[in-house]
Amino acid sequence: MNVRATTLLLLAAALACHRNRATMDYEPLAVTLDVRNHSPFDVNVFALPSPASQTRIRLGNVIAFASAELRVPTAVLRQGSSLVLYLHAVGSGSSWISPEVSVSAGVRPCLDVHSDLSGNLRMSVFYSRIAPDTGSGHCTAALKASAARR
Image (cartoon, rainbow, N blue to C red; front, side, top):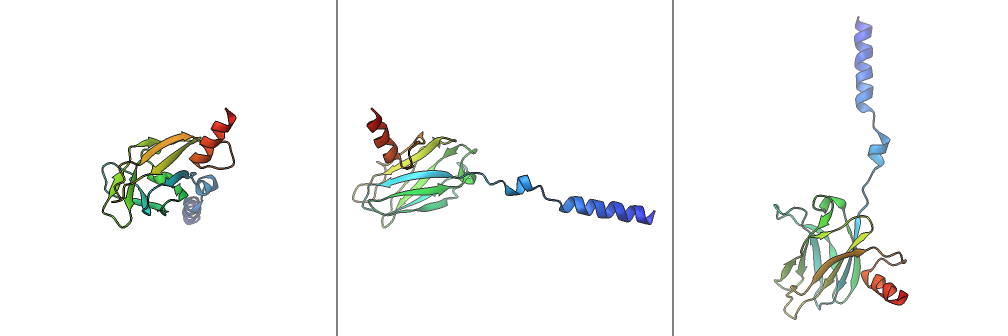
């Protein structure tokens, strides 16, 4: 009886320690956010993962008059399929919360940052577009490639 109990205990311990490799190796793909900063301010870009929370997840910084591709972890997407951004113009007291934009496989979020000289970001535009088949992921490159095909 003792041997049987010990065997069952060892078997239970072995099963508890077993890891499913398929589950452990799975990592959801991140979304790439294309940002074009047309303002004279560096801009900090944050995701707002929940409408009920004031928590901001920093995605990165885009310097004045520059473009960048920022990695957006799937964990910050609202219900796994939409994105809301919070922008802050560095050196000003201005910030902007974007409208909610849907993202999915083959759809790429794009952000055009515009501000006035005081850092007001309300002229910024956040949208999504079908991801380009061209080598470059930037929304600008996709628009140029689309125009060239016409």
